Length: 585
Image (tube, rainbow, N blue to C red; front, side):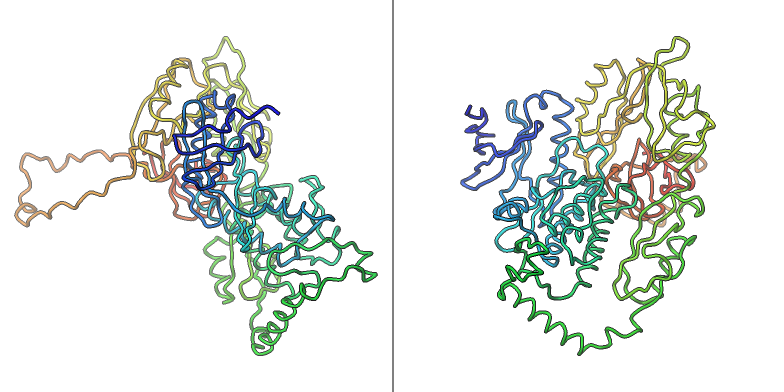
């Protein structure tokens, strides 16, 4: 076997690269050592690293991951470039992956329901921290969940490139598939048609089937919106399951998969040592429930009212009035009936019986799914994008076509055509006269972005703004947005971060005399024009969720969330959208 050319090399004189563990054609993962401590080294493959945009995307992704500090996530210790090696160094995780555990038995292995939910709870708790900070995983599976000898669950293996279009709902689907694998020991299914766990393991609770089905819905809009919402659902089911399972093992230890025939004939019974801890727990739980009989009283239940057509504020008032400590959350859905921002549906449906701590999902309307395509032909692509987004289209594709009669960047036609009903889920295509396509310039330094534009014979217009999330000297925003077609001599505005805003010391208060005697040469009628707001808000991210009042900056403007929202860009929806335009920055 040809030795790996990177094994034995040293990064920055400190990190020794060991044996190659795996690779996918984009990155290769190696064991490593730093200061006599084991680490994991990820190298961007040389052919990919030769592409400047890919290298910057890799390093930008690494910086984003390094900012997420959560106990259940593998920590990135370092990222950088050493000669021609683009790399990250991640903490070493002792233990085995779920895949290694399940594939290690002579027969198949699976986890008991409580143990499976314990693992998934650990995964979702870690992902929730990432989602809260706008970071998605993009590659979760049995090989990226590590279990150590003390029962700790750690998530690793974040996808480093190719995460365009990945959202928190993508991660939720992956966790649902993982739960299916934990419960059944099988991953032999098409991701679009995940079978119910009970069809493979008879006797599993219908609630477990529902958990898997909800997360693996083929339409992402029908899934829990992020890890936090799915975590609430998992915890609710975990509380409702019986305290003892006939096939349950202690902790997160897997158990042999026993087929129905073996169970019915009494073969390979579950050893008493596996069942005893759970039988004891069940007995104690029963005594507690008997002693606290009030917990089962009818007063602790209520019927979910019909909230369709309510605003979020009205719906929350109704739910709080039930005094059940409900965990309510939101997602978005199309609706021909409810006005944008109003409740279009609930899960569970109105009339359902609710108990203390139950989760209620409120689906907010984002308007009708099918809307008439406005007339954008003859205008610029930027104007067309604005009008289409005001109409409700968020997926806009651009196709360049030759035209001797129109300036570059002019809209020639649309698909569907103007006046036809367009499907907001499918998006719309703009056919635009040929010009220069604006590249993605965020996650580049000022000089790198300027050079990229110069190579395309475009002019860079530089403005500066403070930013809490983007490193000083790096591009925080650009206008026009990536993918826009503009003339050969067009301009692109780059908002360059100056780092976090400095807090100025308050000036001494003016005396009464100073206040009473203004400068006679100063004309009080002359007022300074209002300066644009500083871009101190974080850049909008398609994978993040935002609550009412959150601010973001997008394409040189500041937007404030009117309500909970995810995925939709801030300039979508106009007056009825989830975002309120606060002006330029």
